[in-house]
Image (tube, rainbow, N blue to C red; front, side):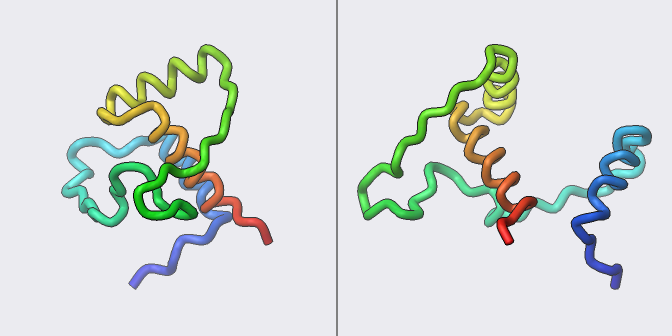
Length: 96
């Protein structure tokens, strides 16, 4: 069994991927974990049948356009892309 990936390994992996992305011949399968594909708004902190608290954030026009393009490609609302990005950032940079 391979050693688990450590946080400090991600930079080297990203650099390697940027210079030599995998080819279609190298990709044999994609395993999708349905639990990782949460749908809809998160309900943490919200009572049943209530909306989650709103937060206002301002983005430069170019970033808004990138968010919108990603949302269209994934067929989800723009807000889902922002939630995913914040969730990923917080997961990769936990407060210690």
